[in-house]
Image (cartoon, rainbow, N blue to C red):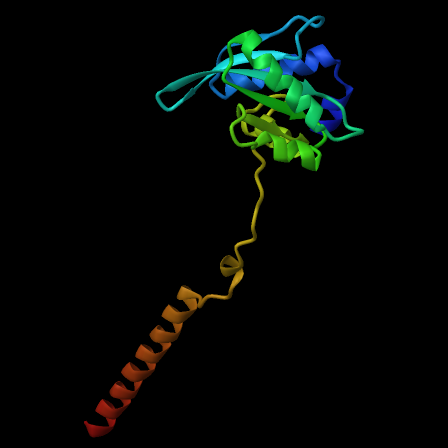
Length: 178
């Protein structure tokens, strides 16, 4: 359902949703680029990886009909220097072609992170973006509560009858002996 709403947003709204996600994930100085002439970058931000501060560029692909291909990755890598960025991320509602996955981890090239639709949905839910968490109560029947337990009053009555009976026998024996 969340994916359906994302599919129906405008491209600019989708970029702002990604901005909200990055802010929730702890990125600083997150900015959505202008809708036109964005130089292949939709969102920029700064992440803190341990003691290292990293400027990152993000390309957002709202498409659902086709997988992201290698030329998109190459274009994003080519835009890193325009934004003084060290690494990039591509976020899509669909998935990535095999060539794109291989290019993302290419030795000697700037690192690119790939976030497909399933991972994006997981991140949005984990960071409460576009959702309202609700706690649902559910109930279990306590079967032990309904198990038959011995009636304490009935037990006391039975002990009382036994005591009275023993006392009566004692009296009868006493009368006979006297």
